Amino acid sequence: MKDELLFCPLGGSGEIGMNMNLFGYGKPGDHKWIMVDIGVSFADDSMPGIDLIYPDPGFIVERKNNLLGIVLTHAHEDHIGAISHLWPKLKCKIFATPFTAILVIEKFKEKNIDITNDLKIIELNGSFKLESFEIEYITLTHSILEPNGLRIKTPPGVILHTGDWKVDPNPLIGDKINSQRLKEIGKEGVLAMICDSTNVFSPGRSGSELDVRKSLLDIMRRLKKKIIVTSFASNVARMETIFYCAEKTGRQISLVGRSMHRIYKAARQCGYLKNTIAPIDSRDTKNFPRDKIVYLCTGSQGEPMGAMMRIANYVHPDVFLEKGDTVIFSSKIIPGNEKKLYKLHNQLVREGIEVISEETEFIHVSGHPNREDLKDMYNWVKPKCVIPVHGEHRHMIEHINFAKEMQVPYPVQVENGDIVKIYPGNKPEVYDKAPSGKLYLDGNVSVDEDSQSIKDRRNLSSNGFLEITILINSKGKIHNNPIATFRGLPIHEKNDFIYGLSNEIENITRKFKLGNKKQEDNLIDELKITCRKFSKEKTGKKPFTNINLVKI
Image 1 (tube, helix red, strand yellow):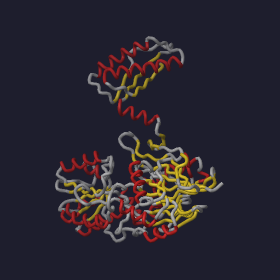
Image 2 (spheres, rainbow, N blue to C red):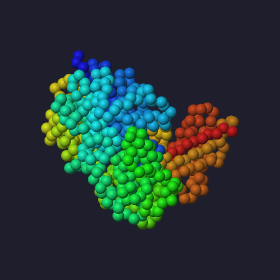
Image 3 (tube, rainbow, N blue to C red):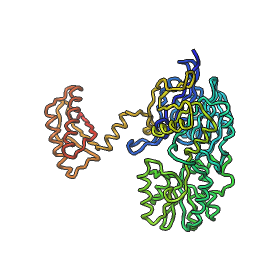
Image 4 (cartoon, rainbow, N blue to C red):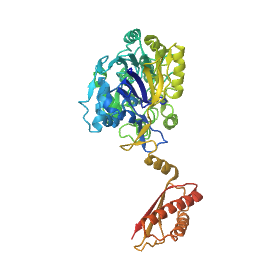
């Protein structure tokens, strides 16, 4: 039997975020695996109480003895955010470039895990070997420091995994895209390219950080009062731009928000941001006139606990907005965040504060490849097969069409859980399915999609809560006057509701004499049905109902 070369995405294919990809090589049934990236996405309002979502790694957990390592392309949360949550199930080596490694170490520190012996730091454009996989980091450009593609050499041939990237001719921080090495890889021959699909609908090029810097400097030169810039903390090039603009306009800069401080510190540790002015503590900014300070803060997507929202709500201890000040949202309005961001914008302008966003000025460029960037990559690499990832289904289907336009012989459409046999065979194709799904971080516990805790919380948020306490004497006789408490029910006449509910409960309890556990359970079930039915008639809501039987 021939050895097989397989690709299987467990996350990030059919959705934006929580990227997790597997490459396998070996005899059927005994493949050795590497994992590329292990990311999260963030829950929306439909998931009350849930912050993080990540791919279910069950398929590879079952094969963890054959997992050679986790290889990280870069430090964005949708590529590394699940590592400290899922690594304890895998217990394998982790490989990353220096900047990514620092942020990974911080994540494990929060969990009180010493990852030192299992984390291997690879220099930029460095390489290493994991049995049949020879892996080389290729420097690309993106909206974070040290973004890498991966040249994965195996006995059947080479795979290029792009990770997130764009073609930025002037990235400001870090090296330019290593197009020379990509062309060399293309000449060697590439069996398959696993490629970013995020901006496949966007024509032209994604743009350069240098152009953003020029525009921001022009904007900040005309502003006469306090300036607050909010951006993604991970975009160190944008961070350096704000430092640069502050210095050029004679202002001091202050960082606001935990993530902003963490990224600044990590960048400095890796030798970046060495020639910038020193930021001042936000507690000291009150000593400076309004026209001599710039704040760079987190919360560009209107996150409830982000620094920007706290500032806008006048609850931040050190940063205050006044009429005539300006807030610059130097970031993309991510689809799904429009409602809360426009609410924040309206709140600010109503207070007499100028708001500048990507809708009004050129203050942001994407970190992902537009169509002309994609053309460059295709022309450099000339892959025989393209497997689009990092996108919703509509992105990946459009990317398949684009690959056909670029004369790629074998574009392969996948979704999470699809197992693609790249070799052997006449052409790469999906030939099997791995179990896949999502896990939710509920507090500090991982739960699956149909977890009872999530169902209960959704029910509570939609329908409210009703609790009935009933007293039972030692002979099993039920006392009258049950105790009812409720939350989240639209009740105007509380006494009338409780009186009517008590009558319904007493009608039910008269039928029961409690001599054993089964009778108690039957009473509880009957009372739940009756109370929910009564509440539905009176309020239109069927509340989450809890019945307590208390023996006295």
